[in-house]
Length: 116
Image 1 (cartoon, one colour):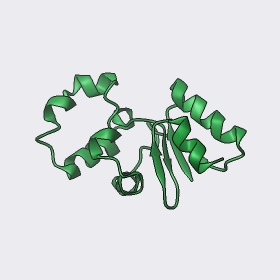
Image 2 (tube, helix red, strand yellow):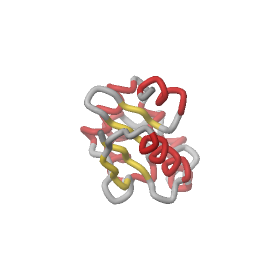
Image 3 (cartoon, helix red, strand yellow):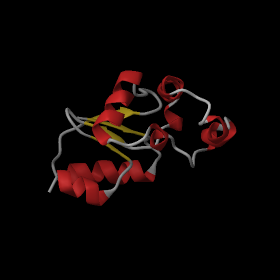
């Protein structure tokens, strides 16, 4: 299982601690240095069932600087995935990618259902 995180993100720190406290094995990847590939992002979408716009970190500075909100409706899904795969700071985090499941963001209630 992969956990894409940003080390300075308090939510990511909390999420990784939560997993460790439950003895869940995972491999950590810095979302900026080792950004998820387009293929990995497609798996996240497939497994999580969320719409592609939910992959974007809408509260991030880069999202605002690039005016992504204004461009969202005119971009294709392939363009969105390519943009996300090129800049981890645009991605909502943490992302957990398992063999047949994925979580975007840390919602303890959802995680609790997976790891009781």
